[in-house]
Length: 530
Image (cartoon, rainbow, N blue to C red; front, top):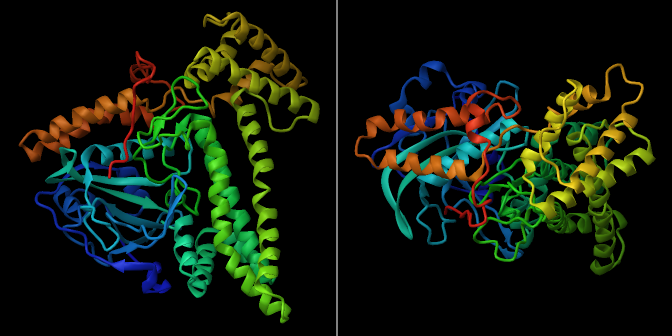
């Protein structure tokens, strides 16, 4: 791995230099070969499990690594904390992947930093394995996400109310810049650092916009507002993909909101089984702030907090441009109007993306007349209301609708027993599909099926299966034979990971993981893992 660390050019206020803590007995449990290959990690290097365990537990540093812990603030469940930062993570550095994209390589659970706030800086085994499983599942499902390169057992026992095995998970991300990173410098009035951060972020994450600002010689306020719109668009794309597959993040704090629009931090996350827009599984989300159906509006709130951070830059720019005696209050009012014009775009853009996504899940194309779009949107709302009222499983319902089109082509009837309400909806759906796809070169069912199979998974990482697998892995690691842990954990997870890596295909093994929990996840809770 050829490491570099471009964060270092930002200055010492952006990070703390910190070494990972060496651990007792590092043992490699999971290694993501496909990701490793895409990160240009040499095959010879990958074959040495002991060396990998040393490197990706933090006990030994790879050549060129320069570990740092990043500084950031954050709104946590709506309450602002001015100083958070990487309290149990160390960024080893950055590598260029096979697509020419810069990727951070970060250890998580690797010991204390100055941001630990009395925490021990460690990570328990189950949360580390969960992050690996869930991030790989989201990646395969087509959701923007950070990914996991490895999980290493540390040989230590840590205490989270109960004694648990310790682990270090290695995460790759296009960066670890968060809305909270901007908040950190805004709250302390560090205008020069905000400018530096803005420039760095645009160059790293928005190369096309960066080229535009150079070629069109954009004014600084145009750059600021254009950047805000770019981030807003990324957040919409991310949330829509979460909603498409039934993913509930569980802790959408601004320090967990990446500027790149990637899913990050999988502690309290869960998958929705029965459709419920109010579904919450996170044990710390007492008031349902981050419920499934609220994720879109929370993302807008988070973007608005980014906009707050950019106001001082706009005020300073307007003051310099006008060179007048306008008071700061007037200039700030002007700046607020400008950022509001961007933030207020969110609802319209989100609604359009939302209904476009569901139009695909129901087999409709993107290009439709306004009248047809209204009909499709209404049909979507009606289906979701039926699913809510009847407690229908989200994934199974859309998969069943997808399969029903093939049955229709083959002259069969929809095999699922439909309630009278859903049967009426089903007939309306077919009539509208025929209307939308009229004049196509193939029967409307075939055209619709082609759309639906790409967006409706046949399998998701269901909560009860994930928990059962994590429990089995913990049992294996509890056995006092570290040499067998790698084979044991891989034996337990191999089939499941193979299935979730192909969520739109159906293998024989897929059937084992499609069932719903007996209690419908009524008593299921997820936890932060810190």
